[in-house]
Length: 274
Ligand SMILES: [Zn+2]
Image 1 (cartoon, rainbow, N blue to C red):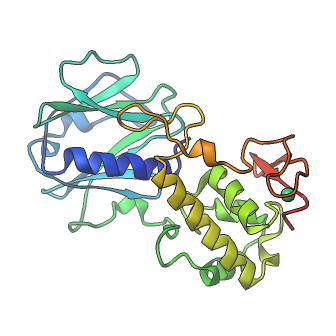
Image 2: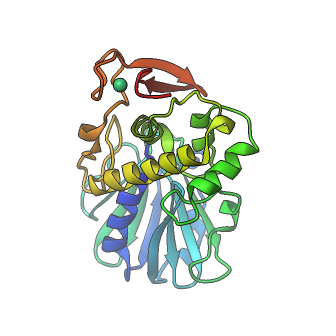
């Protein structure tokens, strides 16, 4: 599933390709993805300049000069390509956005867990109203050890689940939680409320580090994720613990154990992680 670094990689590429252009036509080839598609019936989306493409959590926000916005969520296996208008449509390319520069932005979503919503924004740069309840961005200065400590102190549950709770911090995701917890030496099944402020600081620092490294590598491709030019994210080569069950820990050679926490695969070195 595309997590924050993958969405950030896509957003950066879309920002480069689309800012200053506008949509001249939008075609849909399906009525419903996760929600009904209405954007082909919204003339306000056409012929207004694209001023920014930005990210909030795992949402891609395309903001137009007339304060209308297209908000895209890739779901489990959604992807976006930018290709010339005359290129043949692929089977699962459900929505085609025609751009004023002769290119098309195509939304491909074989498993249909993704969605596209539209909304109007109260002011330029504002968040779409339906995203107001989200927690802090992990790479923002608001995500600190102290903040995470105050959040974990008032909640129950494993620290891993708290790091993946979008009302605390958004978009970190299973792969990056595993990597950050290994780097910080903290077991994913520890009670969140048992972490000291120093451990929270260490963990927050490692979350930021792993996300930044992954963005630099163009994200992580495990199965479906692709960058907008179709290439794979290269961070998969850097993974230290995720997906390595049964293999030796890279720090101490102890066998890495897989378990399920919060319904998701977790990987732990019981010697390095306390
Ligand atoms: Zn180890």
